[in-house]
Figure 1 (cartoon, one colour):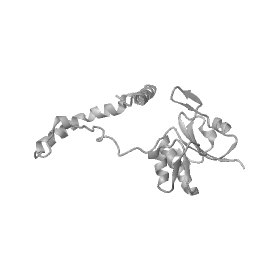
Figure 2 (figure 1 turned 135 degrees about the vertical axis):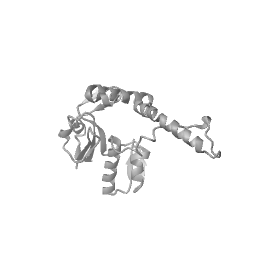
Figure 3 (figure 1 turned 90 degrees about the vertical axis):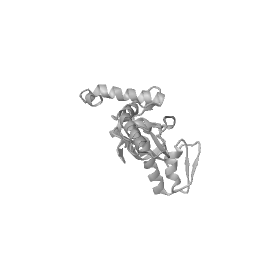
Figure 4 (figure 1 turned 45 degrees about the vertical axis):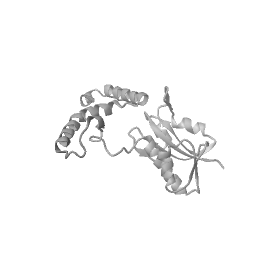
Amino acid sequence: MIHGLRRYPKCKQHLIRLAQIVNLNTGVNPVSVLRSLRTLPAFLRDARTYQHACDGRFPLDLGTLLPVLTDRSEAAGTIGGHYFHQDLWAARRIFARRPDAHLDIGSRIDGFIAHLLVFMPVTVIDVRALYFSVPVGRERLEFNAHRVFDPHTVLEEFSTLQLLSFSVVDDHGALRENVEPALCTGLQFGCGLFEFTRNG
C-alpha cells in the first residue's frame, strides 16, 4: 500500500503525519503494527517447525507464547534524529573543554547524561547551562506539541549572550555543524544546537 503512494507524495505525507499523531497520543505505532502483522505467518511457520523438532524439554505452550514479531524486520537500533545528534554534539564539546564537573537540567539520564558520566561527574540541577537546543525552521506553533523557532528569534531572546557556535540537525536527520543560522530559516523541522557564552 505504501509503495503505491509514491505517486501521491502529499497523501503519503498526510498518512505519515497521522501515524505520528496516533503514536504520540496512544503509544501505538501503526507502521509497526502493520509490519508485525506481515511477519505473523513467518512466526507461525517457525513455531510449527520448533514444535516438530522439540525433544519435550521445552514444549511449545500457547499460554506462554510471547511473539516478538518486529525482530525479523527491524535493525539493531536507530541512528539519527534530533536527540541522538543533540546529545553527541553537546557531549563532544564538553569533553573537549574538560571541565571538572557538569551541572545539568532536563537531559535524559539514559541519553546525554550517560554519555557524560563515562568521562566526568554530573550533577542534575534546576539551572539551564549555556548549551541550548530547540526546534528550528519556519516559525510556527504546532499546537499542542511544541513551537518551531526561526533561529534569529532565539538569537534575539539570548541577545545578552554571545553565540559561540550553531549547528543543526536538518530535515533529513543529518547533523550539520558550524553553519550560519540564516541557512536554517526555511527548514520544516530542524533541531537547532546553540552554544552560548556570557559577554565579558
